Image 1: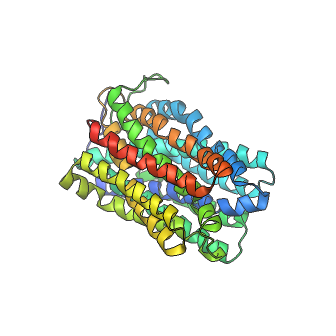
Image 2 (image 1 turned 45 degrees about the horizontal axis):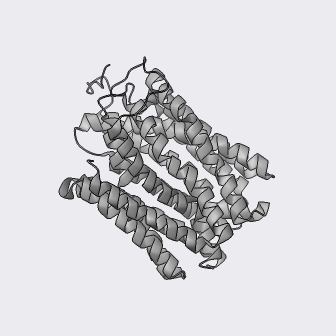
Image 3 (image 1 turned 60 degrees about the vertical axis):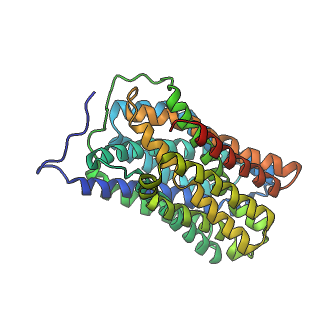
Length: 386
């Protein structure tokens, strides 16, 4: 194995690399939040029930999970720089296909490729972040995820404006695709050329050790909460909160804003109070926010509740990914893929679970169940050596 070489006068400085990797996180978050902001619109256009929407949304995590072993191997074999570029370009170009989908089958097919591209971009940009963190010699992973969340906030805000202006999803998605392609072309030369712990001989399938499984379980709980917010916040505000049309996206925007803000202070908070305490509080905030939105499903309390959920999930994935990227038994790319396999199962189970429970009871009951997952995360963090 080889590790990153510190920059010399002939190579970009670590700040330039950090900016380029930060831009990659922003473009990735913009793609995902653009789709999330228009899920409610697509549901109405195709006439999908909550249960049917849950089944359709299952296509995204299916694509994610199908690509996890392959993405980790590709990063280990060819390096994260190439995979960042390919992943983001594919991610962006699938967006208009979602806007063109006229049937449920077409939408699900597009979402499978959307999930595949999302994971390719996710594994590769986080591998780049691990390398930049090594150059700095301190924890900065959360700040990168903060940029991703800031992009999510930006995408949600743009989506709210598009909804208010009655702009069709295809036009909206095409605009974002053009912006992402331009961004990829601008930042590509400044990505890290070599990954930390690069090992081209890694096999495709590697079983994670116990420590990585623990990290994956914590990521699972957090990602289940994130997936609920991404896929169902708009639907919850439309059907349960009964918000006006122009305010349907405010819950998702509130969630993304506090998740972004939390990630920008997460490194400082973790250094001051410790990883275990941070994870414990994360679970409590997630549970409290969801229970508030369930108990008082009106505009202001539900918005505050979604803000608390954003605070709760803000630190978990950065902490988990940062620890996984420093694994001593796998390359950074393979370790991240192993943890993501467990973590993204939360995305796999979340959307259909919400839809199925809502179909037999209500969305409020579904959200209450996800609140229990937040409490489970607190218990797991208390008992696990993290």
